[in-house]
Amino acid sequence: MVFSRRSFMAGATALGLAPKLAFANAAEQLIASESSHQIAPEAYPATSVWCFNDSIPGSLIKVKQGQKIEREFVNRLPQDSSVHWHGIRLNNAMDGVPGVTQDVVKPGGSFDYHFTAPDAGTYWYHSHNRSLEQVERGLYGPIIVEEHELPDVDRDEVIVLDDWLFTEQAQIHGDFNAMHSLSHGGRLGNYLTAMTLAREPLTVKQNERIRLRFINVATDKIFSIGLHGFEGKVVALDGMPLVEPIPLDHLVLGPAQRADVIADVTTEDGGLATIVSHERSSAIVLAEVTVSGKASRAKRDEMKALPLNHVESPGDLMKAKRAPLLMEGGAMGRLRAGIYKGEELSIRDLVRNGQVWTFNGVANITDEPLAELNLGEDLVIPITNQTAFPHAMHLHGHHFQEVLADGSLGPFRDTLLVNRNETREIAFKATNPGSWLFHCHMLSHQKAGMKTFVRVS
Ligand code: C2O
Ligand code: CU
Image (tube, rainbow, N blue to C red; front, side, top):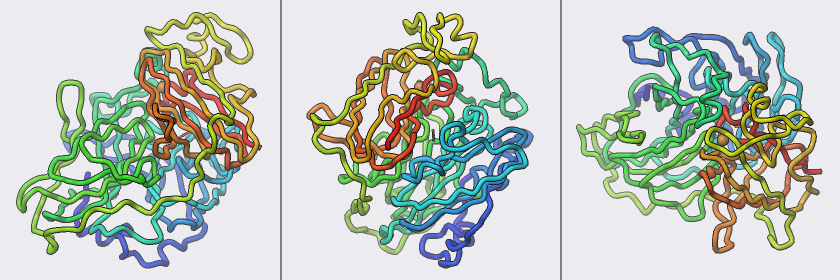
């Protein structure tokens, strides 16, 4: 599922090769429909999926930093849907959250999305209605927002990580309400894929410098990625360039997280470079990359950091508003009761309503925001995970920073993994007016209660 040089050169994705016109298409459509694709090995039947523009992953959206993204979303699914543009600091009405920023788009209906992409980097789009089911069925796609000045790399590849829960016939398992997975680590698959944007295998050259844009679109799985035959650095997380690129020993990506890696191929001509997923007791090879030939420039210059995006950090945290978030519930949790739709329910009655997790004692979203902020105000959220599972907390419309033990601020992120029994503090400046979801991006957990929002006005 990785692609060849030839198809790469022919596609619209080649860095610097695509004519400018390719970006200027105004009212392009993004059509969600049922389809069928060969995802499992050839010995298995094709898998029935739901996807964007008949492709898994959905078609690449690529613009220059500061340009507009405009898509007419057309819903040809048998269910209501919507599109969320994950990680993009866009205008609230375009955020794609049914019941919060727009109405659902009915089957046969459409919705015009149009917004500016202010930050360069790797983002993605996905359904935000019945997300556990719709994202699992394949409704996601990559977004590249290009830097004004492109980094010096020989090629640029998107790698979409997913796990699929397949039946023996390689069909997507249709039970999205299984309480066991909702209350544990979520819906975890039995087939892993690292997909690029074309079907043929990827071939690289020794010493080639490659930008790899990893996107974890899995509903619940935390990927732990190992790269063999590549030597490089992580240069961006969740789209945002790092001030100091970090070494590439172990790349842990929670659901929805992204990492941009710039690496040189160290495998010799004729060998294989591999991308593996570290599982509990083994490593699964996600991709084998054939190394054929040598790049002309054997020794490359020192890898440089990417130009930073202009995101404002919070100011004096002593003066910031604070809104603690306590996560409770799930299997092996201590939750006895919680508020659901304004009523205090016992854990049994919560479960009866498909709810098993709470934020500050409340399951699922209500009219009450976690915090009300004025534009320009700073918010600190100490997140305490009193459950037996990790959670991937995602904030819409803003990137936040973690407040580290020494009081300094970590890299800008839009999704943070919070492990069991941990308390982690995040902070951000409210720079974008509207109601912004703050939820666990383990979509099973989101469905079963882990969802709130902040309001900026
Ligand atoms: Cu990527 Cu609310 O989601
Ligand atoms: Cu979670």
